[in-house]
Length: 406
Image (cartoon, rainbow, N blue to C red):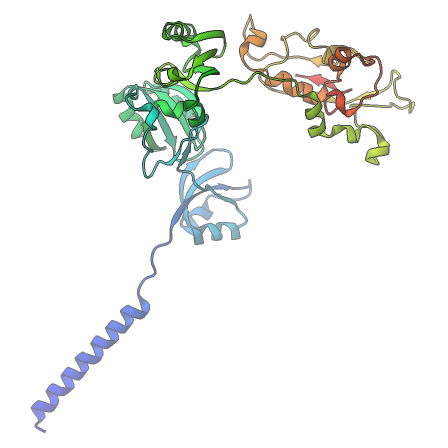
């Protein structure tokens, strides 16, 4: 073999070996596909430092100024944060919008669903939007939307809110760094499919977008042929409606949502059974040294004397009874102990509270669940009202002898 030919063969061999090595390195040592990223809510204790985020490589989206952070991270970075003893919670399905009271749900990353057939021909008002934030919102985010010209409606699940705004304001809001998605608040988002497709007459509650629109909305509903039964704050209208009118009602821009209004029935018996508090009232049942009714014997060891010890329950809620600390529902002011309301503070600053017409009885309901003594139930059904002998069927609260600070 000539030296030239031998040299050519050696050159080709070297090139071939280099090619095989290069191909092998690509096939064996190719980069792994990138990990999926998720959004996590992370809690740092007072001794931890934000430096841990930089060390791990996670991206901080929001600092909530209370030790909580919204971060963007891969699964391996989330595991690394956990190894640093951080409390890490992945926000699952955070882009899924759940529009109560309707049963409409959809992923805002893929787009909204098509309208139901019953809504054919009815259109969006072009001024009511859903704004979805990148995570749990901060109060200043809501303030900034209003400063931009939007009018805040209700807050909704999935870190979202219903907002009235012009198309120009919508463009400004969409560009805010903490806003993930903005879309139309369609009429069929305001009502459940079951109610929308019902037949015949139905009793409904219609919520106005703003309380100031309640009276004018009532007039429009009457003109439409709706039988308005009552209206109260905040922005609630109870009406009897022929079902073919429901698409027209939810298409009104003043309407926030519509839901079936059931006539409430007293359920003291069932409530008492669910609470199960009666098990703690009698030491023979609970095995405890004393009864947990909210009143215990004082130093003399005898219950019912002047040195008895009372538990005081503090509640902060929407409002209490008629707003009077000295009179109201007999379960709080009558019975063997008498008036059990120790103090009542009204933080609303309203000179003329509208009592039960405010539309929210949750504070009174909660107070009854905690300290109600069953006086009204006993009086209604002819049971003795001057003793502390309760049976679980009497609908008393968890601690029927406790006192209240509201």
